[in-house]
Length: 137
Image 1 (tube, helix red, strand yellow):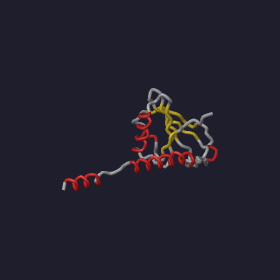
Image 2: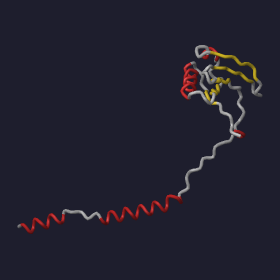
Image 3: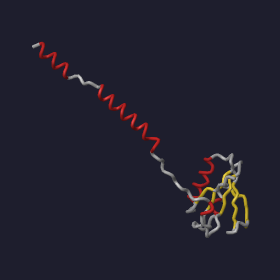
Image 4: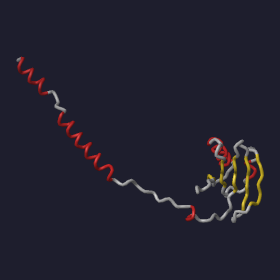
């Protein structure tokens, strides 16, 4: 009876060596095929391909001291007006919610300040808000 019990104990053990071998073979296969898989390439449009806006956007500039300047230009880029505003006055500047707004921040302005201005513009009903950047040369 003792012998029968010892045979059962030996049969309940699992031999993991074949599983480790299979895992190592799979690892080698994945390591060899991974560099051969081409990553997805995204073709972004350049600035030259973008269409000209139908409405000249209003620019909101955030200076280093976090003061705000609102700049209006015509479609050719000619400056029509430029005035300093406070955050409370910012809501009164935008009468038409369809007019696009570009927010530009100084390099040294905290990202949080830019987001706060964008949030205030959204609360005042402005529908189209973008970030203005200078193209690298």
